[in-house]
Image (tube, rainbow, N blue to C red; front, side, top):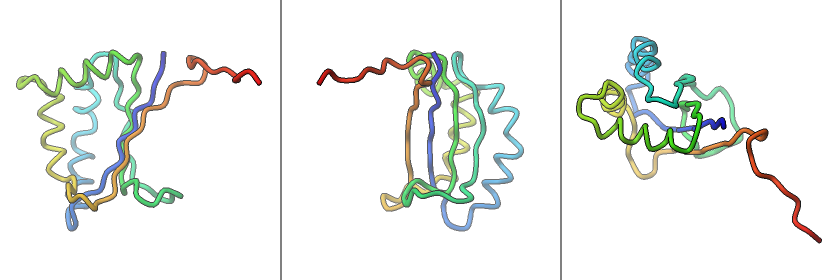
Length: 120
C-alpha cells in the first residue's frame, strides 16, 4: 500500500526565515530519522492554493501502511528517538494559535484503494 500524509501548518509570525534555515539545515537528518514504513518527502511553502485555511507550509510523508502511523507515533513517544527530537525542535516554529491556518490529510494511492460504485 501507499499513502501520502499531509500536514499543513503556519509558522509563528516573524519566524519564517529561521524556520527556512532550520528546515534547510535539517532536511537530511529528518529524512534519515523517518520511522520505519515512512519516507519524508519534504516540506514545501505554498506558492498558490485554493485552500483558504490550510497553512503556509506543508510537510509530506509517504507511508507504506496504516501501521506506519503507529510506528511514527511510537517514535514520537520514544525519548531517545532522533525523530522525536527533530520534531520537537521543529514544533517551536509552529503557530499554535487556534486561529492559525492548518490542515491535515491522508491520501491512499488509488491503485490500492477499495473503490466501488453503489448499486442503483
